[in-house]
Amino acid sequence: MLNLPCESELNLQYTSKRVKTLAHPVYAWLGLRPFVGQHTAAEHAALQRWAQGRKTLVEIGVAEGVSALALREVMSSDGTLYLIDPYHLSRSRSLNFTKRAAHKIVESCSRGQAIWLEKFSQDVAKDWSAPIDLLVIDGDHSEGGVQRDWNDWCPFVKPGGIVIFHDARLFDGGWTNPNYGPVKLVDRLFRAAKQPGWQIVEEIHSLLVVEHQN
Image (cartoon, rainbow, N blue to C red; front, side, top):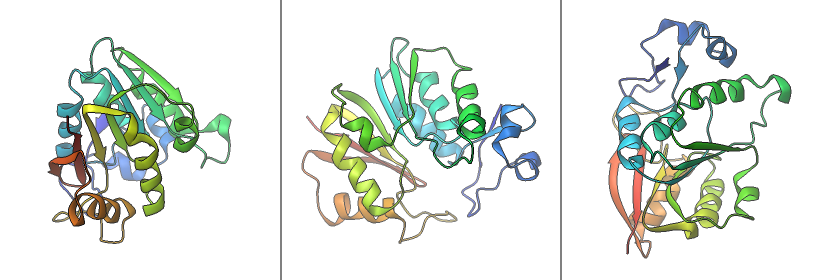
């Protein structure tokens, strides 16, 4: 069903040859190729470790939905996963096969509830009020965009809650570089200075995980 890059290759090489030859997401939606994650197998496992049993989860940036599926498979059986992505890059909103593929794979798991919010994250944040157990920031990758998502959403993460930044650190053989917005933002917030009330609890490939301290 899905295919993850098992090695931290610079170009995210996949084991299935069909991923490269059938790159368009319509082929995933039609079942002609696996759904592909833009994260490594080790990152997939980390997402599931941190999402285990959590009740209120938010992912900013969904793409084909592989990371969302990872979260939904292990969250609390009565949990809610909020998926935020405007899916605005398609030429035709009615034929947006990235969105269709994401809905198909996420809905292949019936655990808890998945709520889709087809808006920009800053617009969703304006009306948000619920405490969050786990937040994944993987949307706008500009430094300003990541900063905005952090500023908008971190106040809702409750003590003991987790924020996961994707594409946020350098690693051997990886695809990130020092100019990546998430890399620059987390270096500034959590390395050059200590963000009060937050602590780095795991770093794995491009993922950086911080916990809201009690």
